[in-house]
Amino acid sequence: ATSTPSNDEPFVLTTPLYYVNAPPHMGSAYSTIAADAIARFQRLLEKKVIFITGTDEHGEKIATAAMAQGSTPNDHCNVISQAYKTLWKDLDISYDKFIRTTDSKHEAIVKEFYSRVLASGDIYRADYEGIYCVSCEEYKDEKELLDNNCCPIHQKPCVSRKEDNYFFALSKYQKSLEEILNKNPNFVQPSYRLNEVQAWIKSGLRDFSISRASVDWGIPVPSDKTQTIYVWFDALLGYISALADGQEQPDLLNAVSSGWPATLHLIGKDILRFHAVYWPAMLMSAGLSLPKMVYGHGFLTKDGMKMGKSLGNTLEPNDLVSKFGTDAVRYFFLREVEFGNDGDYSEERFINIVNAHLANTIGNLLNRTLGLLKKNCQSTLAVDSATAAEGSAFKDNVVKLVDKARVHYENLSLTSACEAVLEIGNVGNSYMDERAPWSLFKQGGTASEEAAKDLVIILETVRIIAIALSPVTPSLSWRIYAQLGYSRDQFDAATWRDTKWGGLKGGQVMAEAQPVFARIENESDVEDK
Ligand code: ME8
Picture 1 (cartoon, rainbow, N blue to C red):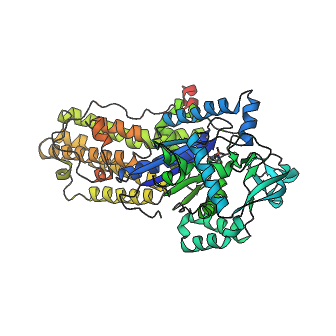
Picture 2 (picture 1 turned 90 degrees about the horizontal axis):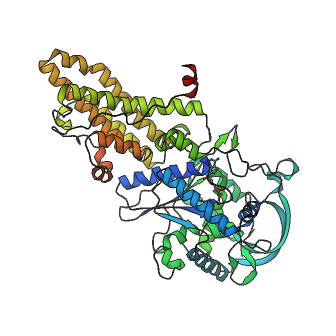
Picture 3 (picture 1 turned 180 degrees about the vertical axis):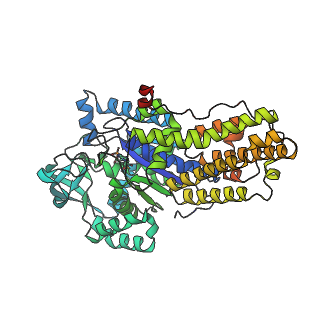
């Protein structure tokens, strides 16, 4: 469970800073969508949120990618970094800070950090010989490798390297790291990843090289211009330099004072070692506080293999968005990939799930209720929703499910949060079918009054669904709110307190019914017609 900060302490949340070797793909989008849902939920709880994302632009892998495109690293980074920003906009990502590791404020902060670690006596010079995966930007243990020295993640041969480098004395922090994890096992989430991290530490931490003599595209080592700082020693600092916005003289402690430490680093499980072992040790060395939590989610896979830029087996988020819309993409991946675990994508499942949940369970419930309200009540609510639901067991059930959703969101169980909200839609549909207000209206008299109350009860239920699902489907939720007669400002001002029963008032006039989520036609169905 997240340690809930007090309301004046900001909730500082980060995505990984993505490599710009290639344009973003669905895997990069996945982490960012999940982070956005968490950020939006925390804002609904009225926390001050600082949501950080950005791009990791230095190192050998990027320089090689630029060269392969016939471009300079600088131009290449500008183009790809912009592609991330554009995609984040298309996916309704509500980030507060976008850091590029080529920003000048970042360079200043990395150099300062390096100097602090040097002053702690944790940097020394030595020869290193090992096997390197350029796609991981990491030296590998021989026992991790597949046949022909192939990296198990990227399925590409690693290369032998021998260099005279600067090293960070990670081994010095072995005991402190063990103690931190024993004292605060919640530091690594989900809990089943903690064992993995503890096993790495137990197997003995080796110092790692933090500079490269063979790479030009990077931040120079302050005391030795012939070497550049290793891309990971540089990139992790982006989480701090992102906070330095608007400061006249960006410096490390200034940036730290603007929100550090992070509440949560949300990352994929592939980079857990960097975040849960290297980074805390680096921060201790520099005398800075540690992030409160690192959450390593699973992989989107294709045929069982991690989808990624290096393997080239990616799914295009732009295509998905233009074909199916932003809400569908956000909802499908958060609802269908059990958060924390791996999950495979199939178009058929995508279409079935979003049609069943967003078009039928939610959209259709709203649409048919508004249709009945127009026909029988001039689109006007007969009574307050609180009055309509007095003593109603159905309402109690909705309240319980909303609480369940909140607890799941707080615990970062995004899939379960979606399930709890959808369950509200299911019970709403059952209520509608059991009560059959359309036939009550035909009976007239008190039956008709009961039917009018039922419509208020259903619409209040859909209103609550809209708020409770808004971290995941912000645009859909707004479209629902508009149908219920609210303004954009009212929707934007909504908080989690608005999931409380009783928002809709008697006399409120609903908008003309329109489908809030258009059913996706299955191409094979279309061909069959
Ligand atoms: O590692 N499924 O950048 P990166 C789920 N620059 N998530 C995926 C994914 C997949 N198939 N593929 C990528 C880096 N991701 C470094 C990070 S942080 C200071 C530096 C997500 O572009 C996942 O979060 O290779 C993974 O950890 C991240 O993208 C890595 O992105």
